[in-house]
Image (cartoon, rainbow, N blue to C red; front, side, top):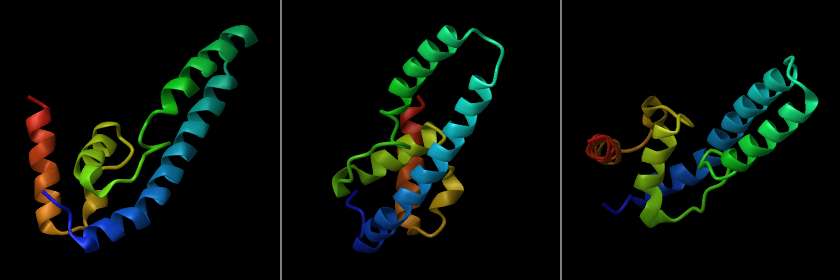
Amino acid sequence: MEPSKKDWLLYREKIAGWQEAYMEKLIKEYVDYLNGDEPASTKFWRMEKRIKQDKVSPGVSIELRKKDMVFDLVRLINERVIIFDDLEEFSDDLREYVEFIQQRLSY
């Protein structure tokens, strides 16, 4: 499915806010962890590993391509960057297709 121009423009408008909110959530998780009782060396190396993993999340970094938009939306939902309700402003066709792909990938 080729996303409509309207859906593509809306996606490009929303992605930065979604990422910012996701990164804010990550920062809070990091702070909570760093305030824990483990030794500093343990926290340092676990945080280094965690940040390395988080950097490749679409909630942190994503290459915007119209042809990948539907799959990126599915990935954003599956990785809990957004929820399906965040797509309420998008077209019914797009939302239905995202839901279809998400169901197909869960089998």
